Amino acid sequence: MNPQSAIRNSRFDQILIRGVNWLGDAVLTTPALMRLREIFPRAQITLLTPEKLKDLWAGHPAVNETISFADGESIFSVERKLRAGKFDLALVLPNSPRSAMEPWLARIPQRIGYARPWRNWFLTRAVPPRIGAVKMQKRSIGDIKRLISQLPTPNSQLPTTGHQIHEYLHLAAILGADPGPLAPQLFVSSDEIETAKKKFGLDQITQPVFGLNPGAEYGPAKRWPIERFIAAAKETQQRSNCGWLIFGAAADMPIASQIESAIGNRQSPLFNLAGKTSLRELMALLKYSRVLLTNDSGPMHVAAALGTPVVAPFGSTSPELTGPGLPGDPRHRLLKSDVPCSPCFLRECPIDFRCMTGIAVENIVEALIKA
Image 1 (cartoon, rainbow, N blue to C red):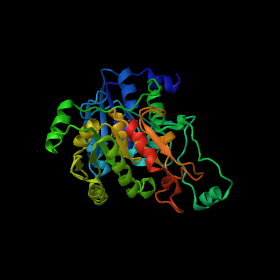
Image 2: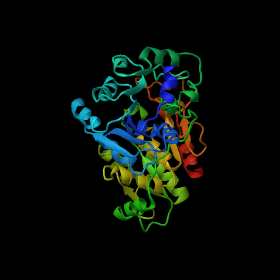
Image 3: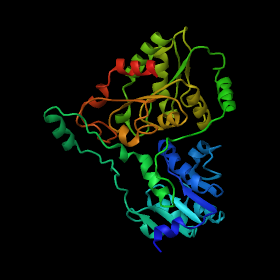
Image 4: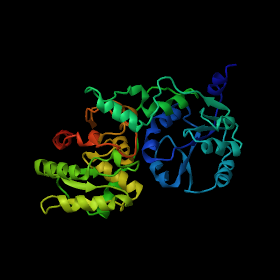
């Protein structure tokens, strides 16, 4: 029997999914998890996830239970937690050696994940790279200078078949799941929204409320300049009479305060929530927002998966590979400037940041108003 057929024809009652480690990536795994739920409607599906992401999965229909681990927790501690689950199968979504070693140490009999250096021995099925996959290759400074020195050419257009959701769907398809794309989806209750509104004093607002997320963890190359966020927020406020919710992690508090000071006025509500919300509260208030202006970031993916339209400038990264929602979803406006060195996938721009400074404030404002 073909090994792939053997996997597909097996019955699994206790399934472990080794989840990914970053918020945006976790959101992009939800289509694969939902496809697995379709073919294993009665299975106990447990997600192994970093503690910081555990609450993302509360009430998600694809996941029965989570097992979480803390930053720095030993692999042997994780292994002991997994042994207690008596799992039939582990589907390993990350590409790291450790993520494959964890279910091997726990003696889970079937262990499936992508073939990568230093880990294939820990898997019972090491899956070759997907046809159509696109590697996010960082450009060298030499490549960037060569590209911008040539005659004007548009920036690189990568195929949407390279989007990250297809990587996870392909792994799920090894188990017989439908590989057809689904939009990433998260869930938050109306009670959670009302509770968050009351906690932060939003329950009496009558104006439309827009969200603003000026941070991005990967590095400054993903961040549209702060002065442009401020200019776009002011113009949008004048044209729509909207209020603003400023989102961000604790590390974003200085820039959030800068934006708050620059755009605050007595006529329109403004709430600086950077560093103040739990993950569930962030989800609730992103759902409450009419639209989110954001860099390419975890909150961008969360908002889109909750059904909130997103307006996002892209520079060093590619919306074709890691954009919010399904590629081409008309609810989201993903803006790029026409420069040949984008996407470079670097943390910091080695030249003049033209990919982001080339995205005009007026284009962002128009996208927000039309959302």
